[in-house]
Image (cartoon, rainbow, N blue to C red; front, side):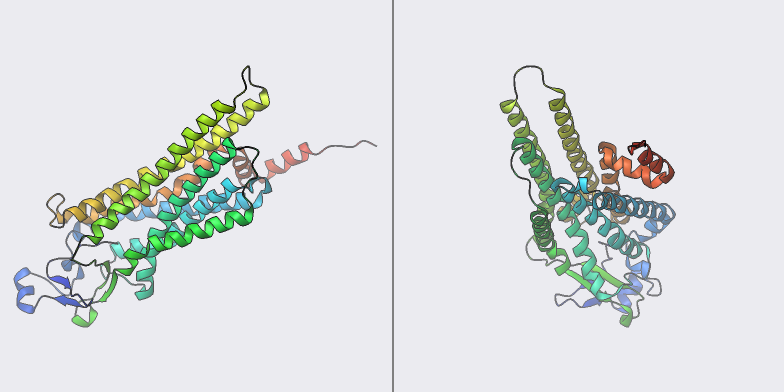
Length: 360
């Protein structure tokens, strides 16, 4: 939720706000009756409002419906109750939380000329949840990669129990919240209305001393990409080595071929999910890193910052839409549930045809 303020606005070290005096404001041509005059690039952003709002609405609807359906399928079918699907369900729950809570509030703040209108608690909670869902997705994808390796490399080993999956999921969210705490800690809620400016600001203000913000941006960039991509690569290499080591010479049986195809489909699902996540979040992470490296806006002009941020944020939020489609395209049981929900009459006919008949 970074919106770039004009030079006439500053934040004191104690978190209070300071504005330029009347003479300075007059010299800079500020109009305190219009909050948009305090921001650079907001006018250009407002021109694209008719384009961005429908796209954000589409993301929320598609991600909400898709991830809800995916969670319903996993919960309804006992055959899907395993460790991999448990972690996929956790991934869907995180995406659902992000698209239903973070996206509407962030979009409202970006396009509302009066700034943040949801109070101080949510000002700190929304950045925490948005960043936590990113780390939760990274750790969930890593857990899926580890589980895939165990299943393929050690097929006779007992799978992790539901209780164990729950503990891993709890650890994922606790660690994600801890890693996402710094942006929320440095977020400031500034109400400028007592100063005669109809504006409420909810922004991150990191200390000027040191490069904490830059270090954290580098950490997020590395964690968001190196961890899932490295885990998938290591898992794939380990699986390949294990399959070659334990493969039986000769022509594989039909059961072995089916087993291999199922494992390939599951691993393809993991690779597709990681690539979709990485590609969607890459533009926003790179843009944030550029802004941290270029505080004087020499690379990207202030006029275009807001539009670029909203574009990158929209692409990042769209990552919540893809996993349900990836999972449905590679999992026959999910497609069967989808047909059942969309065509209930056809589903009942299939169930009736599958039942055995008894003659007297």
